[in-house]
Image (cartoon, rainbow, N blue to C red; front, side):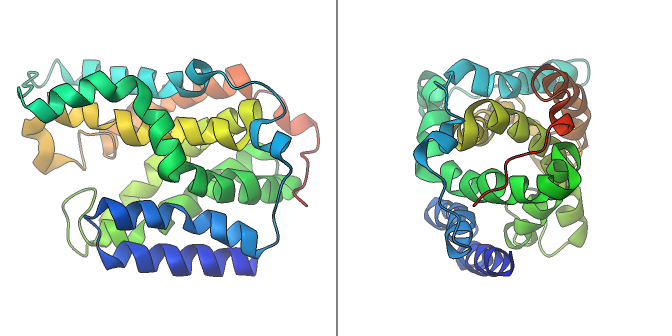
Length: 252
């Protein structure tokens, strides 16, 4: 696992520090976990990438749709919706249903190949899937440290509290990704990851006035954590209940 950590964090941090506001470098960083898993010699057969079953697009991504809906609705009593009629926003709305698949191919598969394909089963062999999911969520959150320190999520420059705060949503999101992985393998987790990256910005478009208080309101803030808790609980009960009663398959 040392080579996985070295490559994943070495390349991932280097790409994030290169240019935190450039989508090119951020997507490049997303492939670092896959390269780390390959460095460890992890090469699963193709059926393992889909858990040996046909992937359901909607069943992979619906938890994120529910989460974003809870975010939007829970803000209404406190803030008015103030959408901006920008052409880019219209284009986003037209392409939003297909964006999770696009993001999965461009970069999310690279992360999930490492996080859920390799690291999760390796830790689950000893700790079980629930605890392993929490552990992967912590590692996954801290992996974003350079981007957070450079202001990518919260607009804060070199503030450690941003890194610590970001770990909270990644822990809960890790449970959702584990459930998707157990259903549809790495590709299921990649589609859900793509939904997070492409649908969470919906909130920013509806409540642009909250851009300066992302630590509190938005998907990566405390409100995001609060609304993720019930979604994670529902999804885990539906798709991962009792999974730790059977020993997980250890990646070769």
